[in-house]
Amino acid sequence: MRRDGRSSDELRDIKIMRNFLKTAEGSTLIEMGDTKVICTASIEEKVPQFLKDLDRGWVTAEYSMLPRSTPTRSPRESTSGRVGGRTHEIQRLIGRAMRSVVELEALGKRTIWLDCDVIQADGGTRTASITGAFVALCDTVRYMMKNKMIERYPIKDYVAAVSVGIVGREPMLDLTYAEDSIADVDMNIVMTGSGKFVEIQGTAETLPFDKERLEKLLELAQEGIKKIISLQRSVLEGEG
Image (tube, rainbow, N blue to C red; front, side, top):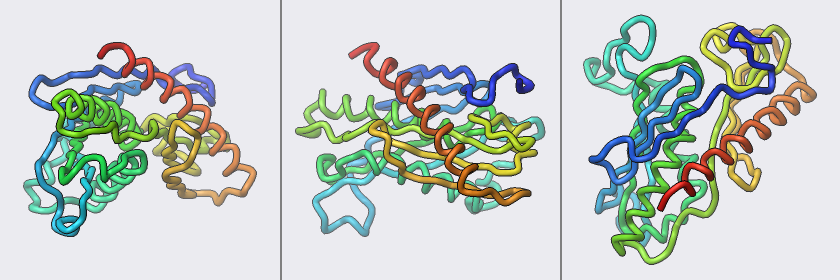
C-alpha cells in the first residue's frame, strides 16, 4: 500500500469539471488527487506563419504553474523574460498530443490555443494537463460546429495521459510528487482511445531498467489511460 492507501495499479481520484470559466469557448478544471489544473481553449482566426500558404489549421498549447501551486513560491516566468526549458517541453508535449487526434484541415485557417495553468501541483501536472485540455478542446470544437464555423467534426479519437514509475523497486501508476521525487524510473505516457501510443517519455533516475520492467510500466499506463478515457467519455456525453 502507498502513503495515500492506493494499490500500485490504482489511479488517484479524478474529477473533471466542464465549462469551468464563462469567458472561454472551452474550459475544464481537472483534479487528479491533489494536482489541479485549469485548461482553457480559445479560437484565433489565423494560423502560424509557417502554415500561411496551406489550407489547414493548428492546435497549440501554453503551460504554466502559479507561484503558489507548490509548497514554496516559485517566481512567475514572465518576470525572468523567458520561458524555461521544462515549460517549453511540456507545452510542446501538450500540443503534439492534441494534434495527434485532430484533422487539422477541418479547422480551416484557424488556431486553437490550449492554456493549461497549474493551480496546485502534486505530481503529474503535464499528464493532467493533457487529459483536461482534450475535454476543453472537444467543447471548443462543439462550439465551432454549433456556430457553423466548421463543416465537419475534426476530432478523430480520444487522447489522455498518465505517469508511471518504479518506486522502491515496484512499478506504480499515477505518481504523486512524493513518489516521483524518489522514483528509480519515471515515465509519462500519452495514448489514444484506440490504444495507440502518442508519446513515451521515460528516464532511469537512479537504476537502469530492463525490457520486462518497461513492458510492465507500459501495461500499467495502458490500463490507467483506458479508465481515464472512460471518464472523459462520460463527462463529454453528460450534456450537449
